[in-house]
Length: 135
View (cartoon, rainbow, N blue to C red):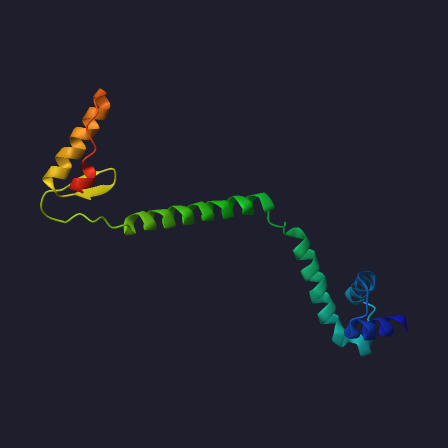
């Protein structure tokens, strides 16, 4: 019988999708011989699985990409804020100091020189560069 040959080929992994559909249709019918009834639950289960898997829509690729880009953006923000929070300044926690251009100065002469130099640049005056002598 043809069905018996298809069953042997099925368990050997040699059947095509059409042949497997033929087997499922055969075992869904009420005309299954007694000697083959043991295979019926297997093919009934596969048929039910195929029908339910067709009703479930595959995930939308665009939504997945959007979700993944959101996760990447959150990770980038987290890593960036972590890096910024771990940067240490050289300024003491107590005492007087000033931050100029991201550097910490505690020496009064340097602070005055840098402040005078900045104000002179804004006003168009020129001050000799003695900053190397001070710090």
